[in-house]
Amino acid sequence: MRTRDTVLEYQKVLDDAGTLSKDLDIVDPVSALDIEVEATNGSLGNKSNYLSDVITKIEIVDGSEVLYSCNLAQLQALQFFKTGKAPVMFYSEHASGAQRGNVRLLFGRHLWDTDYAFNGKAFRNPQIKITSNLAAVRAVSATDAFTTGSLLLSIAAKVMEGQTPPGQYLMTKEINSWTSGTSGDKRVELPTDKAWRMLLLRYWLQGQDCDTACSNLKLTADADKYVMLNRTTKQLDAEAYAQFGGIVWQHNIYRCNAATVRTVLTKEPRVLPVTLQISPYRFFGIPYAWNAQYALRVYDNTPTPVTTDEDIWTLQEGHQLHSVIPVVFGKLDDPASWFDPTGYGKIEAVLSEAAATAASVCLEQVRPS
Figure 1 (tube, rainbow, N blue to C red):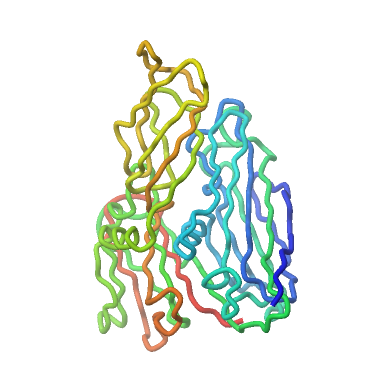
Figure 2 (cartoon, rainbow, N blue to C red):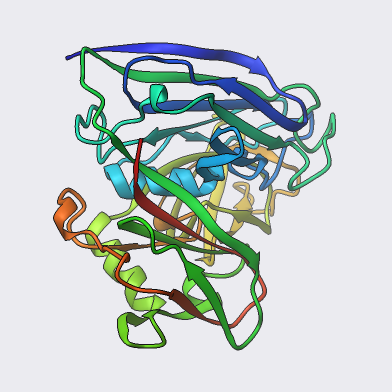
Protein backbone atom coordinates (compact mmCIF):
# COMPACT_ATOMS: atom_id res chain seq x y z
CA MET A 1 0.00 0.00 0.00
CA ARG A 2 1.15 3.52 -0.84
CA THR A 3 -0.39 6.60 0.75
CA ARG A 4 -1.03 10.03 -0.68
CA ASP A 5 -2.76 13.27 0.26
CA THR A 6 -5.32 14.58 -2.20
CA VAL A 7 -6.19 18.26 -1.70
CA LEU A 8 -9.88 18.83 -2.41
CA GLU A 9 -9.99 22.48 -1.34
CA TYR A 10 -7.44 24.95 -0.04
CA GLN A 11 -8.70 28.06 1.75
CA LYS A 12 -11.92 28.14 -0.20
CA VAL A 13 -13.93 31.23 0.77
CA LEU A 14 -17.27 30.14 2.23
CA ASP A 15 -20.46 32.14 2.48
CA ASP A 16 -21.13 33.67 5.90
CA ALA A 17 -24.12 31.33 6.00
CA GLY A 18 -24.64 28.50 3.54
CA THR A 19 -23.57 25.04 2.40
CA LEU A 20 -20.64 24.06 0.21
CA SER A 21 -20.85 20.76 -1.71
CA LYS A 22 -17.77 19.00 -3.06
CA ASP A 23 -17.58 15.72 -5.01
CA LEU A 24 -15.67 12.86 -3.39
CA ASP A 25 -14.68 11.38 -6.75
CA ILE A 26 -11.62 9.51 -5.47
CA VAL A 27 -11.18 5.99 -6.86
CA ASP A 28 -8.91 4.65 -4.10
CA PRO A 29 -10.03 3.96 -0.52
CA VAL A 30 -10.01 7.04 1.73
CA SER A 31 -8.77 6.56 5.28
CA ALA A 32 -9.63 10.05 6.53
CA LEU A 33 -10.53 13.61 5.60
CA ASP A 34 -8.56 16.43 7.21
CA ILE A 35 -10.83 19.48 7.45
CA GLU A 36 -9.58 22.93 8.47
CA VAL A 37 -11.47 26.20 8.80
CA GLU A 38 -10.17 29.70 9.45
CA ALA A 39 -11.85 33.05 10.07
CA THR A 40 -10.90 36.58 11.14
CA ASN A 41 -11.93 38.43 14.30
CA GLY A 42 -13.22 41.98 14.36
CA SER A 43 -11.16 45.02 15.33
CA LEU A 44 -12.36 44.87 18.96
CA GLY A 45 -11.83 41.14 19.41
CA ASN A 46 -14.22 38.20 19.32
CA LYS A 47 -15.07 36.93 22.79
CA SER A 48 -16.36 33.39 23.45
CA ASN A 49 -17.13 32.88 19.76
CA TYR A 50 -15.32 29.85 18.38
CA LEU A 51 -15.01 28.09 15.04
CA SER A 52 -16.53 24.92 16.50
CA ASP A 53 -19.79 26.91 16.80
CA VAL A 54 -19.95 28.12 13.22
CA ILE A 55 -19.49 24.83 11.32
CA THR A 56 -22.96 23.53 12.04
CA LYS A 57 -22.90 20.39 9.89
CA ILE A 58 -20.33 18.16 8.18
CA GLU A 59 -22.03 15.62 5.96
CA ILE A 60 -21.14 12.97 3.43
CA VAL A 61 -24.06 12.16 1.18
CA ASP A 62 -24.92 10.08 -1.85
CA GLY A 63 -27.89 11.85 -3.37
CA SER A 64 -30.54 11.86 -0.63
CA GLU A 65 -28.79 9.19 1.44
CA VAL A 66 -26.74 10.47 4.37
CA LEU A 67 -23.51 8.50 4.84
CA TYR A 68 -22.01 10.61 7.66
CA SER A 69 -23.31 13.64 9.57
CA CYS A 70 -22.32 15.66 12.64
CA ASN A 71 -21.18 19.17 13.52
CA LEU A 72 -17.61 20.34 14.10
CA ALA A 73 -17.81 20.22 17.91
CA GLN A 74 -19.10 16.63 17.86
CA LEU A 75 -16.47 15.58 15.33
CA GLN A 76 -13.63 17.19 17.29
CA ALA A 77 -14.74 15.31 20.41
CA LEU A 78 -14.98 12.08 18.42
CA GLN A 79 -11.44 12.56 17.10
CA PHE A 80 -10.13 12.86 20.65
CA PHE A 81 -11.92 9.71 21.82
CA LYS A 82 -10.73 7.74 18.76
CA THR A 83 -7.10 8.87 18.76
CA GLY A 84 -6.33 10.21 22.23
CA LYS A 85 -5.03 13.38 20.54
CA ALA A 86 -6.70 16.77 20.73
CA PRO A 87 -7.68 18.41 17.44
CA VAL A 88 -6.15 21.74 16.45
CA MET A 89 -8.14 24.50 18.17
CA PHE A 90 -6.36 27.83 17.74
CA TYR A 91 -9.39 29.78 18.94
CA SER A 92 -7.95 33.24 19.50
CA GLU A 93 -10.06 36.19 20.70
CA HIS A 94 -7.39 38.75 19.76
CA ALA A 95 -8.49 41.88 17.92
CA SER A 96 -8.20 41.48 14.13
CA GLY A 97 -6.56 38.10 14.69
CA ALA A 98 -7.26 34.83 12.92
CA GLN A 99 -8.83 31.68 14.34
CA ARG A 100 -8.01 28.22 12.99
CA GLY A 101 -9.62 24.89 13.75
CA ASN A 102 -8.88 21.43 12.38
CA VAL A 103 -10.48 18.01 12.64
CA ARG A 104 -9.70 14.59 11.22
CA LEU A 105 -12.76 12.66 10.04
CA LEU A 106 -11.60 9.06 10.37
CA PHE A 107 -13.38 6.35 8.42
CA GLY A 108 -11.49 3.68 10.36
CA ARG A 109 -10.38 2.95 13.90
CA HIS A 110 -7.18 4.87 13.20
CA LEU A 111 -5.35 6.44 10.26
CA TRP A 112 -4.48 3.95 7.49
CA ASP A 113 -6.86 1.29 8.85
CA THR A 114 -7.01 -1.27 6.01
CA ASP A 115 -10.13 -2.96 7.47
CA TYR A 116 -12.29 0.17 7.52
CA ALA A 117 -12.14 2.91 4.88
CA PHE A 118 -14.46 4.89 2.62
CA ASN A 119 -14.85 3.51 -0.90
CA GLY A 120 -16.30 6.24 -3.11
CA LYS A 121 -16.72 3.80 -6.02
CA ALA A 122 -19.43 1.98 -4.05
CA PHE A 123 -21.73 5.00 -4.36
CA ARG A 124 -23.21 6.84 -7.35
CA ASN A 125 -22.32 10.44 -6.46
CA PRO A 126 -20.65 10.81 -3.04
CA GLN A 127 -20.17 14.37 -1.85
CA ILE A 128 -18.98 16.16 1.26
CA LYS A 129 -21.18 19.05 2.38
CA ILE A 130 -20.04 21.72 4.85
CA THR A 131 -22.72 23.96 6.37
CA SER A 132 -21.54 27.16 8.05
CA ASN A 133 -23.04 30.09 9.94
CA LEU A 134 -20.60 32.79 11.04
CA ALA A 135 -23.42 34.41 13.05
CA ALA A 136 -24.22 31.29 15.11
CA VAL A 137 -23.07 33.01 18.32
CA ARG A 138 -23.02 36.71 17.38
CA ALA A 139 -23.98 38.64 14.28
CA VAL A 140 -21.16 39.14 11.77
CA SER A 141 -19.42 42.41 12.56
CA ALA A 142 -16.33 44.43 11.74
CA THR A 143 -15.77 45.05 15.46
CA ASP A 144 -16.63 42.34 18.00
CA ALA A 145 -17.41 39.16 16.01
CA PHE A 146 -16.22 37.29 12.92
CA THR A 147 -15.78 39.59 9.94
CA THR A 148 -17.85 39.03 6.82
CA GLY A 149 -16.33 36.99 4.00
CA SER A 150 -13.43 35.72 6.13
CA LEU A 151 -14.40 32.04 6.54
CA LEU A 152 -11.92 29.76 4.72
CA LEU A 153 -12.13 25.98 4.22
CA SER A 154 -9.42 23.45 3.39
CA ILE A 155 -9.98 19.70 2.86
CA ALA A 156 -7.36 17.00 2.24
CA ALA A 157 -8.13 13.31 1.72
CA LYS A 158 -5.80 10.65 3.15
CA VAL A 159 -5.82 8.07 0.34
CA MET A 160 -4.56 4.47 0.29
CA GLU A 161 -3.22 3.49 -3.17
CA GLY A 162 -3.13 -0.16 -4.22
CA GLN A 163 -5.34 -1.17 -1.31
CA THR A 164 -8.34 -3.44 -1.91
CA PRO A 165 -11.45 -1.57 -0.67
CA PRO A 166 -12.41 -3.13 2.68
CA GLY A 167 -16.16 -2.97 1.98
CA GLN A 168 -17.01 -1.12 5.20
CA TYR A 169 -16.27 2.07 7.09
CA LEU A 170 -17.11 3.66 10.44
CA MET A 171 -20.06 6.02 10.06
CA THR A 172 -20.98 8.62 12.67
CA LYS A 173 -24.38 10.30 12.58
CA GLU A 174 -26.29 12.69 14.79
CA ILE A 175 -29.35 10.62 15.69
CA ASN A 176 -31.29 13.43 17.34
CA SER A 177 -30.82 17.00 18.57
CA TRP A 178 -33.18 19.02 20.75
CA THR A 179 -33.45 21.58 23.55
CA SER A 180 -33.46 19.64 26.78
CA GLY A 181 -36.03 20.04 29.53
CA THR A 182 -35.53 21.11 33.13
CA SER A 183 -37.02 17.84 34.42
CA GLY A 184 -38.32 14.47 33.27
CA ASP A 185 -37.03 11.91 30.79
CA LYS A 186 -36.17 12.32 27.12
CA ARG A 187 -36.44 9.14 25.04
CA VAL A 188 -34.34 8.84 21.87
CA GLU A 189 -34.85 5.83 19.61
CA LEU A 190 -31.58 4.44 18.29
CA PRO A 191 -31.00 2.52 15.01
CA THR A 192 -30.83 -1.28 15.21
CA ASP A 193 -29.54 -2.04 11.71
CA LYS A 194 -25.74 -1.86 12.17
CA ALA A 195 -23.18 -2.60 14.88
CA TRP A 196 -22.44 0.16 17.43
CA ARG A 197 -18.90 1.19 18.38
CA MET A 198 -19.43 4.44 20.30
CA LEU A 199 -22.21 6.79 21.41
CA LEU A 200 -21.62 10.51 22.02
CA LEU A 201 -23.88 12.36 24.45
CA ARG A 202 -23.78 16.16 24.44
CA TYR A 203 -25.61 18.69 26.60
CA TRP A 204 -24.04 22.08 25.90
CA LEU A 205 -24.58 25.42 27.63
CA GLN A 206 -21.97 27.75 29.09
CA GLY A 207 -22.38 27.49 32.84
CA GLN A 208 -23.54 23.85 32.75
CA ASP A 209 -21.85 20.47 32.81
CA CYS A 210 -23.16 17.73 30.55
CA ASP A 211 -23.59 15.48 33.59
CA THR A 212 -25.63 18.02 35.55
CA ALA A 213 -27.93 18.89 32.64
CA CYS A 214 -28.48 15.13 32.14
CA SER A 215 -28.09 13.11 35.33
CA ASN A 216 -28.65 9.56 34.04
CA LEU A 217 -28.42 7.53 30.83
CA LYS A 218 -30.31 4.29 30.32
CA LEU A 219 -30.03 2.15 27.18
CA THR A 220 -32.99 -0.22 27.03
CA ALA A 221 -34.03 -2.77 24.40
CA ASP A 222 -37.55 -4.06 23.77
CA ALA A 223 -39.21 -2.47 26.81
CA ASP A 224 -36.47 -3.46 29.28
CA LYS A 225 -36.08 -7.01 27.97
CA TYR A 226 -32.37 -6.12 27.92
CA VAL A 227 -31.01 -3.10 29.80
CA MET A 228 -27.50 -2.59 28.48
CA LEU A 229 -26.74 0.45 30.57
CA ASN A 230 -28.35 2.37 33.44
CA ARG A 231 -25.74 4.74 34.85
CA THR A 232 -25.36 8.25 36.17
CA THR A 233 -23.63 10.45 33.62
CA LYS A 234 -21.32 11.68 36.38
CA GLN A 235 -19.92 8.16 36.63
CA LEU A 236 -19.73 7.79 32.85
CA ASP A 237 -17.78 11.06 32.63
CA ALA A 238 -15.34 9.97 35.34
CA GLU A 239 -14.77 6.66 33.56
CA ALA A 240 -14.16 8.48 30.27
CA TYR A 241 -11.62 10.74 31.99
CA ALA A 242 -9.86 7.67 33.39
CA GLN A 243 -9.83 5.96 29.97
CA PHE A 244 -8.99 8.85 27.66
CA GLY A 245 -7.34 11.42 29.93
CA GLY A 246 -7.50 15.18 29.55
CA ILE A 247 -6.50 17.87 27.07
CA VAL A 248 -4.05 20.77 27.27
CA TRP A 249 -5.34 23.71 25.23
CA GLN A 250 -3.69 27.00 24.32
CA HIS A 251 -6.22 29.84 24.16
CA ASN A 252 -5.43 33.48 23.42
CA ILE A 253 -8.01 35.78 25.00
CA TYR A 254 -8.73 39.51 24.81
CA ARG A 255 -9.98 40.41 28.28
CA CYS A 256 -9.68 42.57 31.38
CA ASN A 257 -10.49 42.23 35.06
CA ALA A 258 -13.77 40.60 36.15
CA ALA A 259 -14.26 38.81 32.81
CA THR A 260 -16.02 35.44 32.53
CA VAL A 261 -14.27 33.42 29.82
CA ARG A 262 -15.72 30.41 28.02
CA THR A 263 -13.56 27.31 27.62
CA VAL A 264 -14.09 24.30 25.35
CA LEU A 265 -13.03 22.02 28.24
CA THR A 266 -16.18 21.74 30.32
CA LYS A 267 -14.88 19.82 33.34
CA GLU A 268 -12.07 20.74 35.75
CA PRO A 269 -10.48 23.45 33.61
CA ARG A 270 -7.19 24.58 35.14
CA VAL A 271 -6.04 27.90 33.72
CA LEU A 272 -2.63 29.58 33.58
CA PRO A 273 -2.85 33.14 32.17
CA VAL A 274 0.25 35.02 31.00
CA THR A 275 0.34 38.58 29.71
CA LEU A 276 1.77 39.05 26.23
CA GLN A 277 3.17 42.45 27.20
CA ILE A 278 6.58 42.77 28.87
CA SER A 279 5.46 46.02 30.47
CA PRO A 280 3.24 47.08 32.16
CA TYR A 281 3.27 44.06 34.46
CA ARG A 282 0.10 42.10 35.17
CA PHE A 283 -0.96 39.79 37.99
CA PHE A 284 -3.70 37.23 37.49
CA GLY A 285 -6.14 35.30 39.59
CA ILE A 286 -8.67 32.59 38.75
CA PRO A 287 -11.23 32.49 41.58
CA TYR A 288 -13.58 30.15 39.69
CA ALA A 289 -13.11 27.53 36.94
CA TRP A 290 -15.98 25.15 36.21
CA ASN A 291 -18.93 24.51 33.90
CA ALA A 292 -17.11 25.45 30.65
CA GLN A 293 -16.06 28.87 31.99
CA TYR A 294 -13.75 30.61 34.41
CA ALA A 295 -13.57 33.96 36.17
CA LEU A 296 -10.52 36.11 35.43
CA ARG A 297 -8.93 38.73 37.66
CA VAL A 298 -6.28 41.09 36.22
CA TYR A 299 -4.36 43.69 38.28
CA ASP A 300 -1.43 45.95 37.62
CA ASN A 301 1.49 46.30 40.04
CA THR A 302 -0.23 49.07 42.07
CA PRO A 303 -2.33 46.82 42.44
CA THR A 304 -5.33 48.24 40.60
CA PRO A 305 -7.87 46.28 38.52
CA VAL A 306 -7.16 46.46 34.78
CA THR A 307 -10.37 47.63 33.10
CA THR A 308 -9.25 47.75 29.46
CA ASP A 309 -9.17 44.57 27.37
CA GLU A 310 -5.69 43.28 26.61
CA ASP A 311 -4.11 40.34 24.80
CA ILE A 312 -3.55 37.49 27.27
CA TRP A 313 -2.18 34.04 26.47
CA THR A 314 -3.61 31.17 28.52
CA LEU A 315 -2.79 27.51 28.92
CA GLN A 316 -5.76 25.39 30.00
CA GLU A 317 -6.07 21.78 31.04
CA GLY A 318 -9.27 19.81 31.58
CA HIS A 319 -11.62 17.27 30.04
CA GLN A 320 -15.13 16.75 28.63
CA LEU A 321 -14.28 18.47 25.33
CA HIS A 322 -17.26 20.47 24.00
CA SER A 323 -19.35 18.97 26.82
CA VAL A 324 -19.36 15.51 25.21
CA ILE A 325 -19.44 12.23 27.15
CA PRO A 326 -18.61 9.01 25.25
CA VAL A 327 -20.10 5.58 25.80
CA VAL A 328 -17.82 2.89 24.33
CA PHE A 329 -19.18 -0.52 23.34
CA GLY A 330 -16.51 -3.16 23.88
CA LYS A 331 -12.86 -2.74 22.95
CA LEU A 332 -12.28 0.11 20.52
CA ASP A 333 -9.99 -1.97 18.28
CA ASP A 334 -11.93 -5.28 18.44
CA PRO A 335 -14.97 -5.42 16.12
CA ALA A 336 -16.09 -8.72 17.67
CA SER A 337 -16.71 -6.90 20.96
CA TRP A 338 -18.85 -4.09 19.53
CA PHE A 339 -22.58 -4.15 20.23
CA ASP A 340 -24.81 -5.90 17.69
CA PRO A 341 -28.34 -4.42 17.96
CA THR A 342 -29.88 -6.33 15.05
CA GLY A 343 -31.61 -8.91 17.28
CA TYR A 344 -33.81 -6.28 18.93
CA GLY A 345 -36.91 -4.53 17.64
CA LYS A 346 -36.51 -1.20 19.46
CA ILE A 347 -33.68 0.34 21.48
CA GLU A 348 -34.01 3.66 23.29
CA ALA A 349 -31.73 6.01 25.17
CA VAL A 350 -33.61 7.30 28.21
CA LEU A 351 -32.08 10.57 29.43
CA SER A 352 -32.95 12.12 32.80
CA GLU A 353 -32.85 15.88 32.17
CA ALA A 354 -32.39 18.76 34.62
CA ALA A 355 -31.55 21.91 32.60
CA ALA A 356 -32.45 23.57 29.30
CA THR A 357 -29.44 23.16 26.99
CA ALA A 358 -28.62 22.25 23.39
CA ALA A 359 -28.65 18.44 23.50
CA SER A 360 -27.70 15.76 20.97
CA VAL A 361 -26.92 12.07 20.57
CA CYS A 362 -24.47 10.77 17.95
CA LEU A 363 -23.73 7.13 17.15
CA GLU A 364 -20.70 5.58 15.46
CA GLN A 365 -21.64 2.43 13.53
CA VAL A 366 -20.17 -0.01 11.02
CA ARG A 367 -21.58 0.72 7.57
CA PRO A 368 -21.04 -1.40 4.45
CA SER A 369 -19.79 0.35 1.32
